View: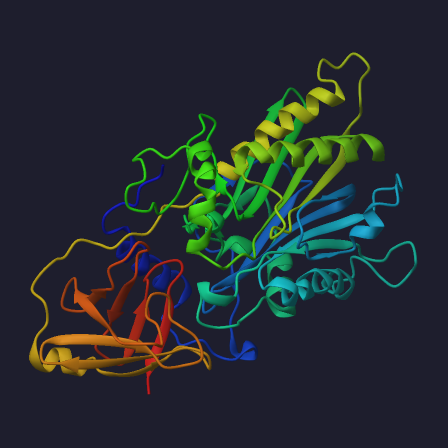
Length: 450
């Protein structure tokens, strides 16, 4: 099991605030500025036929990931689970052998994020790459993940500007890993009570001239599972084994499932090969790889997952009858690459840092009191009682473990940092000028005192 590192959350906060200017109160959609291809740990591949761009609204946080195929490619789709959200999947099922695909678009925002897919098609036309002729119309396909609701305090969603910024920022050979792009605000394991932070992952393998790449935005209801059967990331309940195995955790499902009611999850993925394949061969590759993902994510393709996999052939490598890698073996190899991609999606898990320094007292404590507005839906009211601080959600929604029913005591970690003890890390940081940051770092939410 991946363990949180002490102090990791606050260290990440400084980085993300510096990179994305995320310390600003969320504005309206029209006032947001896309953050395009921010510095990140990345997968690097040598493949000019595939260009990748990401763009994010740090204020959400939420984002878009665009895979652009400049020479067009052949594509198929395989849909699993009970809650998919897609664009143009029916066309990919018709069996045409002509390479027509321009782009695959992954987006946050649930069904609101489907605008991202059509926006990329419009950008291809506006930039003169495609036009209105029937044989030259842009074909972009895409899928969405659910990143709204209780996991953040606002309803900012990817829109046309964000998607087109990601498309126009696309570049060959670089795929950011972790909490970036469409994986900017995703989770895993809520069905089993883990509620681990997740992201987007990618992997690449080349055998001779054959190239294979796999990409996944992992927002699964189940848990990411390593090859030796361990749970890759989880916030365990008290009394659980130190080294969690997926089989043991799934067996606890009847008890663990009741701990979280937020069941809106999806894993969207893409496998790309340079081998020229027929439609039927590419479709079987998609089915085989998608089925194999049940090893890496347990359970997989549930009623509340909207899992979608696209398979793409760039057609650069002609099939050779003497090739040692048959089509079925290609599926086996691609399935292993996809497992690597899923594993690489797991970011460092935030934790509550150890206490450092003396707790604030008197006037300092009272200076933090006030109503901090995060969005039209979430306000946190902070009050002082002597040297103690209390917080209560007073808007339409709870603020994680800070509920609307009653005020909870904030326990000091430092002069400005506080926590609400519990199973899932919750850190509140006051900057002294009227800004409150909840869970500083990649997934932070920022409110301003009224």
